[in-house]
Image (cartoon, rainbow, N blue to C red; front, side, top):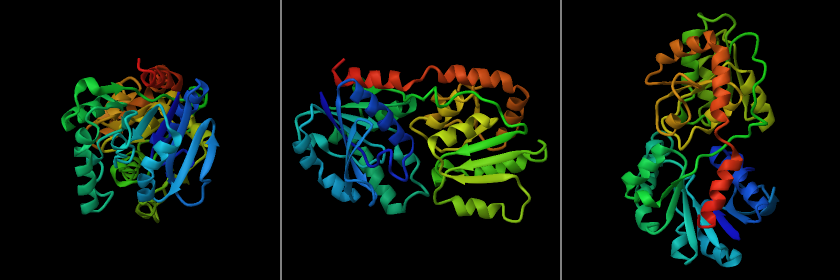
Length: 353
């Protein structure tokens, strides 16, 4: 079998995140199951135009619009048995308009919920409009999504329930594992420093706690448009806050397992992949009770779901006092999710099971 996967970024893109991690982890495992995986994506300008990335044959085309214009050409060139239109960045690929081959739509989350503050008003309106067109563009296609809340978003868009398949992502349980925590309490925020993820709240949480916890440290991992704004908030203050920028995956895993609590502030997510990675590392999370995230935290087990920023304080203090229990529970929860299970579900779907 040969598949063609359309996505806006691949794992080597400088802005790669959870969506690209899923493509990579699933794709390389499908290739080992004798499925030819061809990925067509956007070239940020300096990556190879053609590359085999761990079994994923990757074609990179310069320019977002140009990549979309190549859909018909790439379908004809690859001649796949099945096509995956990845909606990690909202704009549809329109594959069913160019082929009678089987097309599966990979829907992450409803971008209309996360666009305010991210893009200008007119672009937000266009993307929201395009999302409303999904039932017409893909009226006869199967939709794969990761969380219950994303499945409900699809139903509200007009996608029939029997056309929706839920496949949660996994986690590398060998890379993300339990380890020794720092001697003093270390809080962690890791993820994109973008508006809808609200990373600036990490500073608020730290300020609410640093007088209550001796030698409290906060590590902020990642980059994005809000980085300088967040740094400006703490200028001249004697806080123990470290900004690491983006890290290699093994470096990230080390910091996660050393940390005591992972902080998560997103408005919405397709799935809280970072929360599962933290859980696998024995690091509980405190997060807002929002779409996607509610599938990755069992309240009071591998962390807490809260409704406002002030609730973070009490929940973090409670976790610190009961750290051993949360370390154990977090790892147990993460063990329900592996990339092998995720890839197997995709394999069965692609083979019509």
